[in-house]
Image (tube, rainbow, N blue to C red):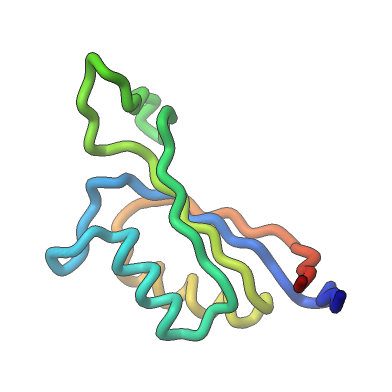
Length: 108
């Protein structure tokens, strides 16, 4: 199995589920953008519990309907490509957090 160890990173974009951009859910818009930029892989993960910079808990439970749950968009590709798309996204996203770490990529 080929291993691509050099120059790959995993980035995580933390936003809220209810955020929109141009009338569309921000996470959906970001995923489409990443695909257009030929990013190797991306996934949107919806949290069931979390908090952000406000310290306010966001919880998906039976007794509470919450529409601003945390959403994480993970993407993997070569570092220069990821940094480039993150810089471009940064010009359009109002708030959020991004983490980036080195990744060892294995293809099966």
